Length: 55
Image 1: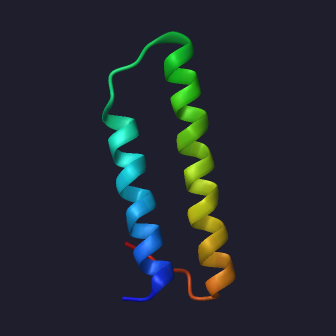
Image 2: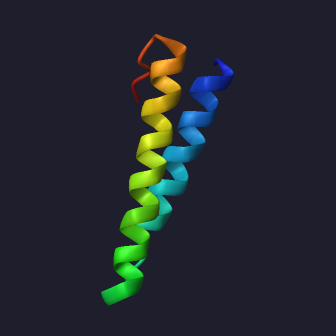
Image 3: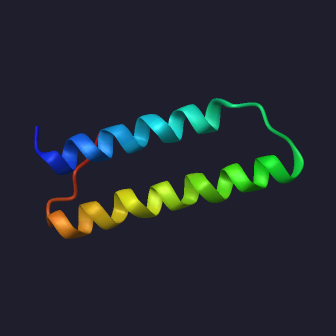
């Protein structure tokens, strides 16, 4: 597995843990912003690798 694929897999694992938390109000909004940033990182890595790694 390439380093990019490994990093993306770890980021997605963190994202799934964050999403599984039960939050409300401002905490929920902050968590959604963090998840959105993680998704941007995954997209950026895919774009840089030129391969579009999918899981």
